Image (cartoon, rainbow, N blue to C red):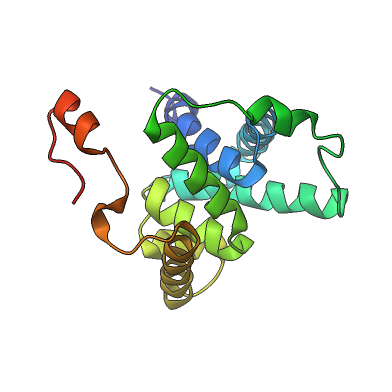
Length: 183
C-alpha cells in the first residue's frame, strides 16, 4: 500500500464523524455536507503537510472547524427562515418520546455559546480526549474542561434536569427494549 492509499482509507473512515460534527456546527445536513466536502478537498490538497503517525481525525476536525468559522465570518450576520417555512416543516408530532427528548436536547445545545457547544460535541459526541479537543480548539486543556463543565451544567438547567434518571427510556419503553427504566 502506498502512503496515498493509506491516507485515502483513513480519510474515508473519518467521514461519518466529520459529518456529525459539521451538522452540529452548521445546523443543517446540507450545509454540513458542504462543510465536509470542503474539508476533504482541503485535506486532500494539503495531505503533504500531514505528518503520518499523528492524529488524522484531529487534523481533519481542525480543518473543518476552521472552514466553518471562515464561512461564518464571510456570511456575517444572517437571519434564516424569516418566513418560518422551515420551522413549520419541523412542527410535527414525533412518533416516540425519544424524538422529543432529542429535539429538546438539540434546542438546548443550540442555546449554548459556540465555544461551549463545540467543546461538548468534541468530547461528548465525537469521542475526543480533552487533550485532542484542546488541540483542535487551539486552547488549554483546562479551558476545554471548563467549557464542557459549563455546557453540561447549562444543558441541565435549560432542560430542567434534576437527576440522572430524568432522560432516557420511560418505564413502558424500558419494558419493550428490556432495559432498566429511568429512575
